[in-house]
Image (cartoon, rainbow, N blue to C red; front, side):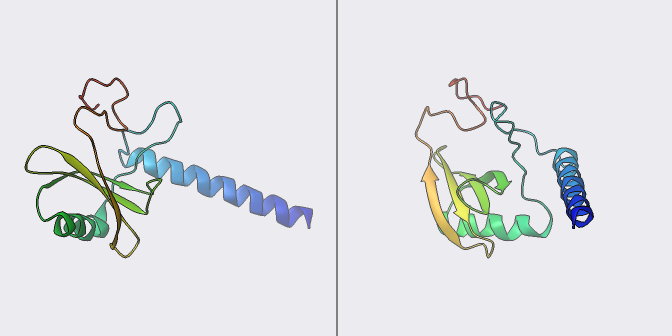
Length: 120
């Protein structure tokens, strides 16, 4: 029993290390450096449907950022509207909208802790 537990624990640790390596290699940049979390952008076959769902829901704008595994939903798509404001569209695994959050003018986003309005 102890051997089985040890093998299972080693497997979990190995998968965690591989997952972290994949996230780092994918250029998951951004993230909250204070908490150690890294934002992983939506990629591959999921990017198109997620972007399309967010734009269809809002009716305008341009996708400016995406994230998988956001704290509020499975996918998050940031859309900059025609007036320059930004809206985060929360999607479930089926690309259905489960919520939206408009960023207030002058409010720093999660990547901009300085409050100067310049992400990065």
